[in-house]
Structure formats: structure tokens, C-alpha cells
Amino acid sequence: MNRKLKAQLIAPCGMNCGICMAYLRDKNRCPGCRGDDAHKMPSCLRCSIKNCETIAKSKSKFCFECEKHCARLKQLDKRYRTKYNMSMIENLEFIKNNGVDAFIAQQEAKYKCPQCGGVICVHRKKCFACNYIESSE
Image 1 (cartoon, rainbow, N blue to C red):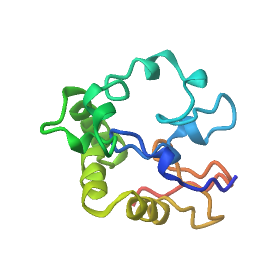
Image 2 (image 1 turned 45 degrees about the vertical axis):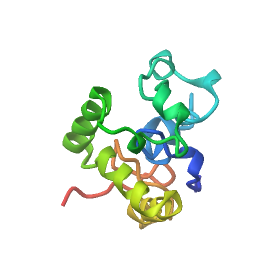
Image 3 (image 1 turned 90 degrees about the vertical axis):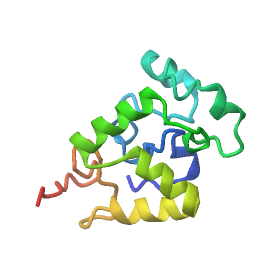
């Protein structure tokens, strides 16, 4: 289960869906924010960021196109900073300044399992391929 990151897995909010528990699990796997809506939870379908008209009209299709960050993005960013040591706003700045390909390379290095080369889940801090658990040091 060595899933390769691709641009399709980078959500408009800056979330790397390729490191998300819902994407990495085998049962009822989420296709990612930009994936097919048929297999998404209703809450994901109603996401204000996914359905943002500004993002839909933008060239990049990312939240960094907005002049100010919406309440939903700020709320997500705060939760992910606190619980998972990851910032969507920092991800967006990186993408804006360096491009999606550079972001994908950075994420692959950051979340690569040292044991099997799989992906470390941002939510569980574990590799779903070999069950390696990242230490919290």
C-alpha cells in the first residue's frame, strides 16, 4: 500500500488528502477533496471551502487566491496546528511560493514511513501499510 502523492490529492484548503486517515484506510476510503463526490460523507459535500465560488473561479483553485482567509479555513488551521502539528495556511503559502510539485516532494519526504516507505498518517501518526508508529519526540 505505497500510495503515491499527486496534485489531485491536494485540497483547496492546503490539506494533503494523501496523508489523511480517511484516504489511507482501506474500508470506505475517501477519494480526497478533489475526488469523486459519490463516495464522500455528506459533511464533506457541504464543505464551504470545497464549494467556495472564489476558489472555483480562480486559476489555481487554492485558498491562497483569496485576499483574506475565511472563518472555516482559520478554524481548520487552528485545529490541525493544535492536534496534528500541521498548518493548512502554511501549506498554502508554500504552494503559492513554490508550486504544487515542490509541495508534494516536501510532503512525501515529511510523511514517508522510515520502515517501509509507506505514508505516515497525519491523524494517527502511524503507517497504515506496516503499522509503524511515529514517536512523539
